[in-house]
Image 1 (cartoon, rainbow, N blue to C red):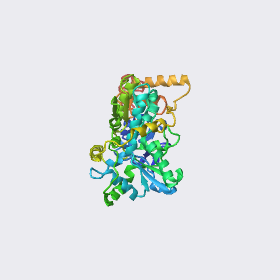
Image 2: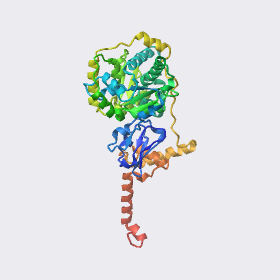
Image 3: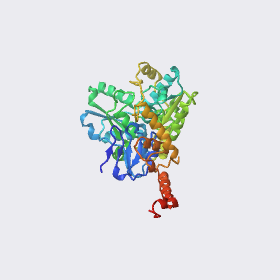
Image 4: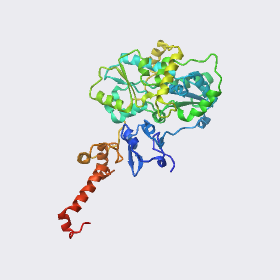
Length: 441
């Protein structure tokens, strides 16, 4: 069977590779995945395209679709907008300038080094924090998987989101405006290609939150373009006078990098599904109100550990540290320029972020109460082991599926074994044999 993509999402599932191991069902932070009939199924309205199912699948059954650079044929000018994580993928001896130069060797007409915009956004967030009011703490919108997690699972935290657009969208908006003016092109003739480390970022371009439409035209996975880019890097000559990346902005590639760029030190960085959900649960409970700002990523080390990268995250972090040390420039971003753009609302999200409603099981109140009661009754019969063998991520989710008619209670192996043992015991009961003419069936 060919790969199938969930409608409206950026995850491909190759059914012929799926072995039904349930690992991804337990990794999913929104409990969007089930294994039914030995194969993976998706609850569409719960998926946030975070890519955890890609990261944890040992059989390669989950992946992200990749556009082709052939999609560039409709543009007169093709501009590469690489995530800063791209610079961490080629080892300590390959400088960002070499990577950017190689992009022009594989078909792009121009590129934009996003490290500069990353520092500008950090400065803009600093300015906004100094002027805003509660509720506290404020939460970064840099990671689109975090934003979508809040939309679905933590809607009460929506007022905590910082209304500052992510660097990738601001960079695309700025470079399109600048190149259209410099080269006499209409904005539609310029194609902006984002080189992405994760499926959530790709989905944020196809279906952005806080924007009516993305300023980016095409998303390419870094893994998909890596081979050609590496070959071009090896074939390219080093320039004597290379453009320098913003050392401070390069920090954005890893978790904690955004906080490191900010003047406000009353901040906290958290990454990884388990730690993020633990922190968000506590924020909902009123804890961490003394913190001004939280930088959050679902990937365990921030974008540098995205599922669409080639280099391992520990090696990538080491490379990043060396690149920052070698860049030799702390900051050349002008504070006056940032404040001017801030006053002009350049950094603002263009739309309010609203909760993404999950389709209810029923709109009838009596039916909803009945389903809740049935769920509680089923859950009381389950072992609370959360083993995932039933195809749901945990016992509570399985109970919900049973109450809704999407599963059977004896899909739980422990309930099934108990049912079989009870049947055997009944067959061995003398009173049972007597009613059957002394015969044991």
